[in-house]
Amino acid sequence: MAGSEQTDAESGGADDPIVEAAAGWVARLSSHDATEDDRAAFEVWRAADPAHAEAYAEMDALWRKLGHLPDRRPDPAEVKAVRRPKRVSKPILGLAAAMLLAGALADRYGLVDRLRADLWSGVGEIAQTTLADGSRVDLNTDTALVLRFSEQERRIVLLRGEASFDVVSDPRRPFTVQAGDLSVRAVGTHFFVRADGSGSPVGVAEGRVEVAEAGRRVPVSAGEVIQREGDVALTVAAANVERSLAWREGRLLFSGETLATVLAELGRYRHGRILLLDRRLGERRVTGAFDPRDTDDALDVIATTMGVRVRRLSPLLVLIGSPL
Image (cartoon, rainbow, N blue to C red; front, top):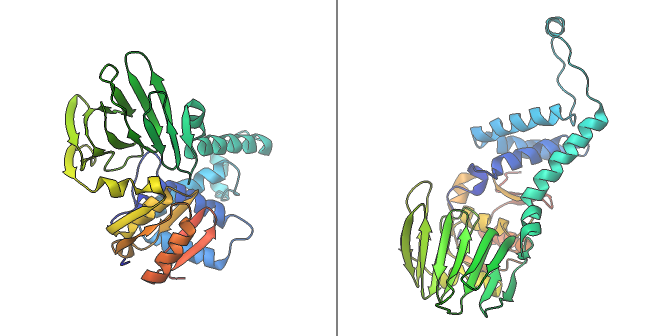
């Protein structure tokens, strides 16, 4: 094993990991058992990127508005010029905070998607089932999907996560997987689809599929994946699709990927966040195999073989590359 580019923890998005990390730091530093090591580790994280400091300031302000932290006392001269707002009771603030937290957790951990789904897997779980038509579906970690089978079609809506499909051919009923704006159509083939913003949302191990998005249709054959980056049109590239599907056998295989990429993949299989503090460290390359069911062991292997410091602040927050 030898030691990736920018991590999820350093990029924006609808489910912004920087914002989540900032919220975690606000909660941690405001707790009664926060230590000097915690504060020093936070300063390292905040100094690593201007976006970190900005996100922390926003979350700190929100936390104070919700009544979790005492607000900073205003200047007495300013108090006279501003009408004091009506005070909201602490129970109401607590209820509002609880509702916001419940909504965030429901979205973060896929509770809403699971309620809508016909099939789902939890974080860190890998599940397999056979559909009514004989096709096999494997669900990777934190995945939810809806089955919409009729006499005219076999359609699956992938709400979140990743799934692979071994499709039984039935020319009378096309097999289609929809993930957001992306649609994948197959007759009899083996392929995977991801609905988590991956740069390679579709890959084909056997047969052939047709991928459609925004009115454009792209054929994808065995040994190829769809690549997508930002608003760039879909492109097709050769890839080791079988290696990408090794999770079905309980293995995550990496060959020369950056450490940042490896940590982002391991993070899919655990609750909480793995936070990389050193961008240069994230560019080191990794070759190896890990068990997605034991990500703590994978982190220990990385720490030992690469000389990386792994610091567990809590079961939900792990720091990688901390100098402390």
